[in-house]
Image 1 (cartoon, rainbow, N blue to C red):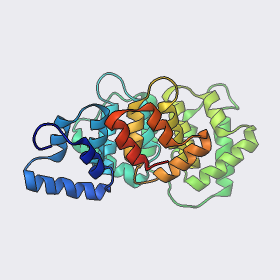
Image 2 (cartoon, helix red, strand yellow):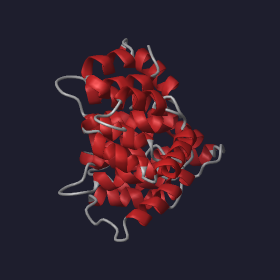
Image 3 (cartoon, one colour):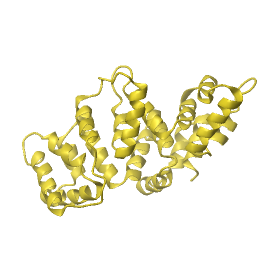
Image 4 (cartoon, rainbow, N blue to C red):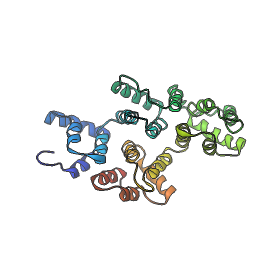
Length: 286
């Protein structure tokens, strides 16, 4: 960044090939050597989607999630997709840490959240059981409860769905989904689509899909962000930055399996310039 212009290639080479921990040390070293904040400096030198990716890479994971949640609820309306992507896929410990950073940045809690999302979040705040225990009798009862709360009645009792989907552990829910298929003759995802609408439908579908396979969930989100005309850059950036060190290899494998094309080829065809270059480096090749 010294002198006229910025060497974007150097920025990509350094930041896209370092871990989060290493990037934090780079920030500290830059501050000591130059006396300025690296993120602040880069934000004045870079622009657009490329800048958004770079700044995201310079944040700790929970800080980035809190930042994305804050952005999702900033201004008029709420970007439910951002809330759902994060809240449906993080563990209890991760959500607790994100919440701490969010509160640190937002002294006054946002009141803009859709009431459906707020109800879901309240259930999530109670904490999901993260053990591996499966209670067979309870799984059968849970399947009956959500069937009777939806397909078997006029209207839908969302509270029953909240109670089961937001609290039970992954192994238990997989058994519930199997039992639900027996009771209703439908896949749980199909029933959610039939019985619900709007952001609550999207939230419940995200929970079910994350319980089945987080890599498949994120592969689908990435595909939808790029298919057709235009690109939903906010979704593409959020997932590529947040999952780069967690399960990107698994997401790439699922993407190829589900869509018959590589994630790399989709990104290459849908983006351009330095933005494309840094995303392809995070993707890690074909």
